[in-house]
Length: 464
Ligand SMILES: NC(=O)c1ccc[n+]([C@@H]2O[C@H](COP(=O)([O-])OP(=O)(O)OC[C@H]3O[C@@H](n4cnc5c(N)ncnc54)[C@H](O)[C@@H]3O)[C@@H](O)[C@H]2O)c1
Image (cartoon, rainbow, N blue to C red; front, top):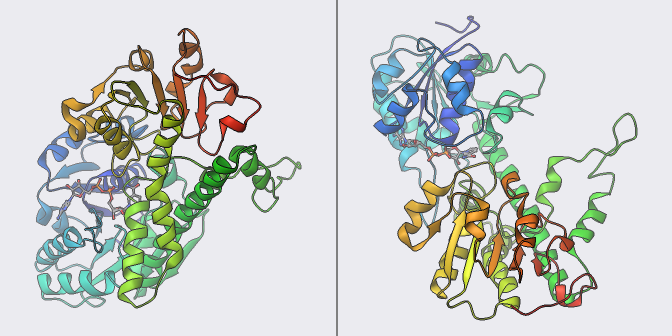
């Protein structure tokens, strides 16, 4: 038993964006971690101290971890036998109708079988985002069935949602704003709390597993709602003209409830403001699937959720609206050379899951445009999706060479030089700034989300 010990032995089952970051960060806090994955290439890469995903600082962190404190394996049974806690961090995609819990169930069943031979109290923690009731229902049933033992008596079960953001995952994990632990018995709560003993500066929310599950969905749904709300306002600004959604949102942000003052009276700019800005829509492995899963969960419980329905339908339109901005300047896309800057769902990650760039690139290709794209880290993942239909450049300069139009889809610092590079061209290509990264005045031919340039005094319309 290690409950009194400062450092625990932890198995993290599923070594993707969440599992690997969780495992590496827990090891950096002194716990002994074994990462488990069914993908042996990932396991080999982790043991070779090369992150199989892009996450700033992760390679360096992996290299700093000694083998006796951090390793990876495909042998789940061995990992469970050697540890006090196992965390389930496998994917929970949306299957088109509802959340797909098959990986969670498979992991729980395998862990259950491994628990059959354990004599010490082991705690299984669900870290994956799962709909309310999953931990107490499907996960506990699979663990009990696999082990022949009783949850809460022979082993513990907890739900501990993860709030890290890709691109800032290490800092988010190591400097959390809250730790949420849902569990039914004090022994399990103590064990999970011991994992996070180093984070005594932030609130620890000790609650039921269902509440913990619901907190995660509610948090993601709120942020997705802010984005779709901002996009709806941006779409109206675009249509009515003489009003820029950026100016509107700046004025809204100055409400002291959104930008409070610090002790010196200076305004604080909370990160939530980044969600209150029009753009080309949210993507990634979380917001789209989590809002869809919660909506489906509501429908199954006969609770209509019209607001979340609207959040999704607004979001689904945003990529097409970005293309409409391009068509304002370039009505016929056939034969045009279009450069796309930013392919992952946001800057700072290589994750292409549900990226708005996917429907945008597909529509450009379908319209007969020649597309060249650049993303500092997502090129390999984009190549897997588009194959040879999409030309990938190695730099912004290469991507925009000869382009008739440039779409800026994410806000990477690597794009900062774009105004200078575009200014070298005569005539200048059209720039469609889906994320409003650049000032309107940075380019001769500019279109931006939430802005109607035909009515803007700043803009002179020049046909392509
Ligand atoms: N990505 C994020 O930013 C983020 C943030 C918070 C929460 N989450 C949630 O965390 C969970 C994991 O997300 P992710 O982005 O890390 O997923 P991911 O797809 O990157 O990683 C999942 C990993 O699990 C492995 N796996 C699948 N089945 C397995 C099994 N039975 N045994 C062992 N390994 C198995 C896969 O090979 C893969 O490496 C999801 O529920 C997600 O909603 C994600």
